[in-house]
Length: 226
Picture (cartoon, rainbow, N blue to C red):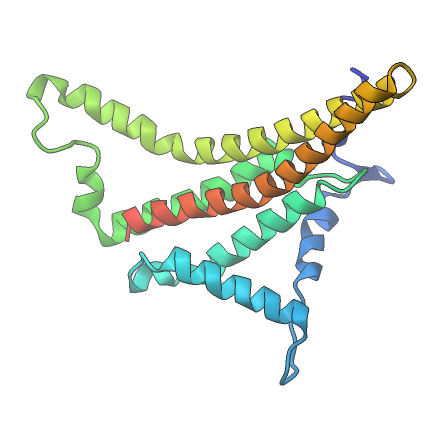
């Protein structure tokens, strides 16, 4: 069991080539577009969810911030669908890779910060030094605020990676324990199986919540800089 514990987090290969690109592009096939006058239930549900989330998330933004609406909605749908697909048996979840999450977090964070320095230079610089700071503490506070600014994308990526990875590991461990207990104690195995089902339901909720939290934090960073 220990040898295969992290096997699901290894990048799948075929003919010596990584399949990450195909896996990352696959969720886009789940959200088709329709040119019909009357949409089917799937398209209507998709559009309803999109309108609900965009209305809730973009209501705090001004005109400049609302130009990011398409990017933020694409981000939440991509992360959510990727996390949900990763719960399928024998599947690979790209969001368990810290490198991929950093690849999403750093450009979005950098874009928000650069937007702030371009449009609100004085206000952005003022965040490094709160008003009324004693003179002896100025160098220390500037260093602390600078570190806290640069740690934001790392916190975004680590939070998403840790939550998704921890859930997959728990499902793997409890599933292995259930199989091992079936030949020893049926009652205990049944209880463990019920726990596994409840944990799987919880992981479905975590998959969607983490997508929302990641996008919401990016949206808040953008709001602070526009």
